[in-house]
Length: 129
Image (cartoon, rainbow, N blue to C red; front, side):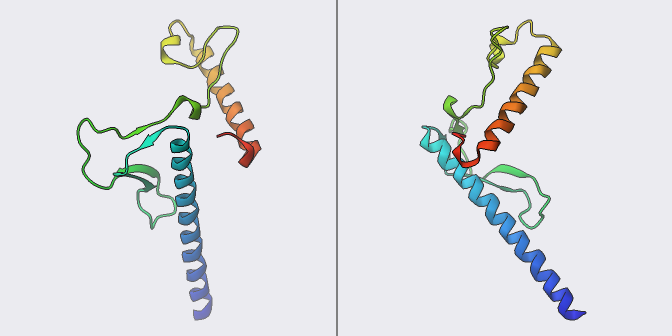
């Protein structure tokens, strides 16, 4: 029984480490991709779990040191956006285009964006995102 508990503890710890490592790799890859597209990401920031020891902890962007009031945090270029365009209404997802948009139109666009995201996910490594 003692050996079982030790093995179970080791498996739990190793899965936590590998999950944390996978998240770190994914977040690093995402930042590198944004940088390769001409974006910026302040070196004083890090993307990590709020509580690295808790597998259910949420991800967030955290300051590693003090950041000045006018210092840029990040810039995500438009080439990194997943956008939708409603040709019938001429709506491209920009907030200034939302004037007069109904709740139904808004929810339709959210559904369309979700579908587009799923399509991109199917491409896997071949997606430009």
